[in-house]
Image (cartoon, rainbow, N blue to C red; front, top):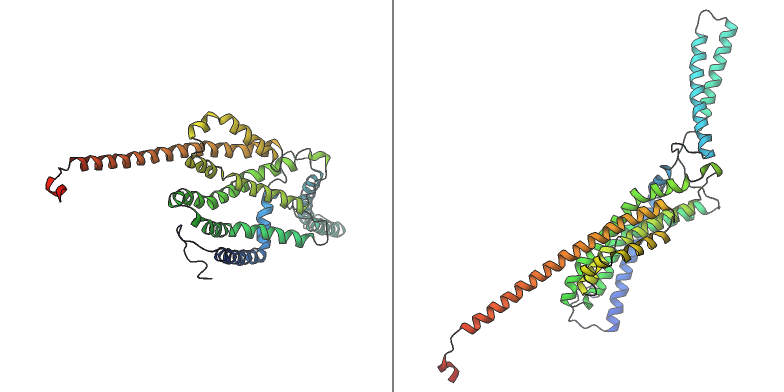
Length: 340
């Protein structure tokens, strides 16, 4: 294994068997890391599920909600508060000296009944996904733990993939590829975090409270987690826009000026991408478009700055070469040395 994972230079020539041996070793290491991350995530599956449920919990008991289930829960809480107040009032009435023993006993009985009614009222809990199949709690937990493990191990998996591919790049290509590859995991995590805190709560709140007076809204766990994971993954991938733009500008396919000139086409493509992503509602679409437009404009600006720096560096190198050539021309020639 140590031989297969030794540093490989661009000028090294490996046989097909050596390439396959290196690939096999990197795949085995990646699987071990993923399985270790999965074991940790499955061990902490209750905490992970709580994290995934928070955007859904924030969509419950919104102001003006007409959801029958939420209205029933609100009524139960109001009844609980009323029962507690009645229990206190009846207890105080029973302590009065002006009350007959029979009425005092009745007040005490009413106080105990009111207290029992308040204790029997269910707690006001936020929405949670429901399961319908016998094995669905286990299978859904297994899938969510797997996706969480993939997210945790993604930086290491990407590093293994880059380490296998990088020797094929020339030194100049490597100078372009390394900074771009280093940005991939950070941009992916930034996209996931942005989607979790900004997109998911608003999208779920809009979708779950839309026309809620006509439905008993029950959300199946399988569908909810699939929707959430697809939104998070899609946003993480879409946050790779700066890398794509920097790559095509550094390679020379397009220039920042051409990207600015064709900005309207980019906006159209971003709108189409946001439309076909999970959710397909105006709130989710607009919240997906906003960061993508910002990333697109910021990527153009970053690409322009990088191009200007490269041009300045190239101009300095050319100036140094020209100056060295002039110095060589100014050196006097020795005829005797030429004769020798």
